[in-house]
Length: 302
Image 1: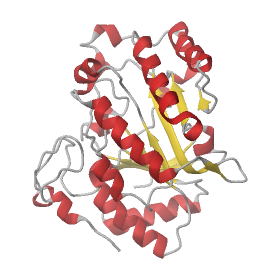
Image 2: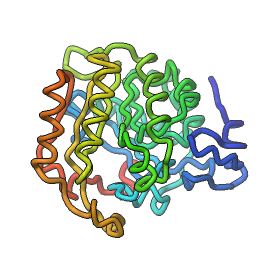
Image 3: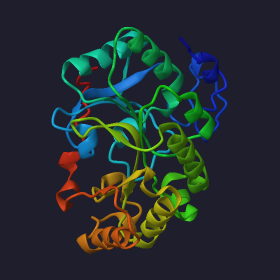
């Protein structure tokens, strides 16, 4: 069993590299101390079909975030405003409670800043019989070194790849080096996972799905991302092109993105992906750009 608590004493788990002592109550860019905080743990039906299936994905939403996009649909938990402290033992219990609800997997949402605790929780859970695939669901803004710690623990990586142009990533996520960081960590995820593997029910049990949310007005940046992903990884990954951008109040000061994504913008990106030969992919219906697709954060299952 491994517990990397020392990594939290001068925390550099994420690319922000705050170097704060989170075990002593100090707070980094993520907004969190070393205390585990969750906002929700429940079955989620709206992930990609090979993640949710019919029964649902066992999502565990962690409070805090190391990226904090200005348009984040989960802003209430990303900014630390909503979250309940739990123990490590309680996290293990939650894994088994989700399994007992017939979850297809354990889906760790925004987990980066709690990687040390998560590794230990997975160790304990597997020792006690947990046999579900573990999904690492993140912003893509990950240190390669942190992803390396997860080798043997994560079965399916589900990262975002948000931006190609780093002036855009700087403006909306305060991350001038997003592309540089995301490409390196993604390479490590693919190295660990190998080619996608599915079970008899069509559920992914090993592999990488890269999500890209198309932003209004940034079709060309989306095309650059799709081209990079396909030319670099080919059919060794799946690409999920998402239309669910929702213009929430916190994005109001950026009028260029304070609108819904137009259908023609999304279709242009999808058509481009098809034109360059992307075969392993997922798309969304336009109805997904609704606030009803944002999970209610109410401490369910916590």
